[in-house]
Image (cartoon, rainbow, N blue to C red):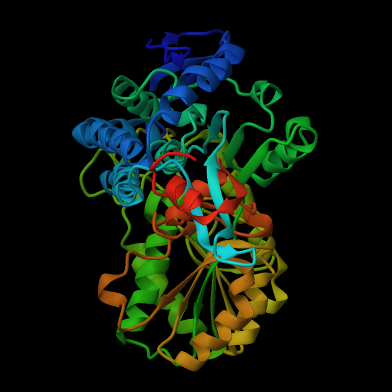
Length: 520
């Protein structure tokens, strides 16, 4: 069986010790193995800080952008191969796999283009200079400078290509070398991406750990950044680590999120905004088998629309063919692992204690083109609670699979915002309305509960990518339960990996530094 080695200190290290078997989640056929231990993590951190950091520090933003463009091209050139791997190891349909692979290359390409705009400089200005002396000669200017350490990127199982790329794009452009740590169960795609990308990047700039990262935070300090995507429990453990609490390690965490879709009372049944709302909810429930951190988990609708929404969504979900995604016509595959299947079924049972079934009952499904008893399948499940205010489970329970709960509210924007806020902080809420006053009211009351607000309406429906797509131009992250981290967001994404410093001095000297003309 193929062993997936880790790429550390400039070479591939197979590791040793206990092995995790990677399988096809539709058929449970073994694909490869990863050893847990036996990696020179201290050497990898030192290699990144020394060789990788020096290589990137010598480059301007524009030159780092050329590296990102080469990284993106390596992924795009192997698109079909990577899609095939994602179908096999991730349980993805072809559409799901394209979403991951194209998201990765697209994000890298976006930041490569952004680097051209930044030009041949090394510092990122934060707003304009301000006069701090008697004349305009003495000014102060906040700028972001490259941190001298390594960025450790720990990613979840659901986006093995895009998860790495969205963090790598901003870290590398900011000037920090990276060590990527994908979730082991689905790391076949990430492993291949690094095989393709490492040869086009300088030594020490990109490393990969496929084994255990348990001891890696012990090696980090205030020079470094740890960017994490995963469960809130793991995020809490990392926040309490001595590297964060004592040594000043910067932690950027994206954790759980019970995202919501809110239908406003002005939306007409059968209209374009109504159609957009239904399409977005159904897509987010089933795309990647609901295994997206941005997927819709709560659907809030006016009380008098509850039945119509349930009927319309149930009809759409009934048309989704579940089975082995390697077969044409299958629109939803399995969840990624046996553990994930167990957790999703447990979450459905918890919701069932306070909701009624609309579609899918408890998640049982007979998948197409799959041997009997094989695969980690869960069917789409839609449940309903008459009143969102009376259903604590829907606000507290993130079921990371093809599951959502519909509930009624009184139609007022401020009540919808308060109900969404009961989720404790979300990555994204999507609202659907053509009433500008209602939208204004929702944003005023609900903005602070979210990292992003998606405003669905008739005029934007034809060009909408849906609320579940994390765009590189916009912030990806959210407050509270969602982790409090910030990724992407254009230039904002670079600041996670840079140090803000106030420059105070001669205006012409500061101007020259920011224009890349050199120093004093």
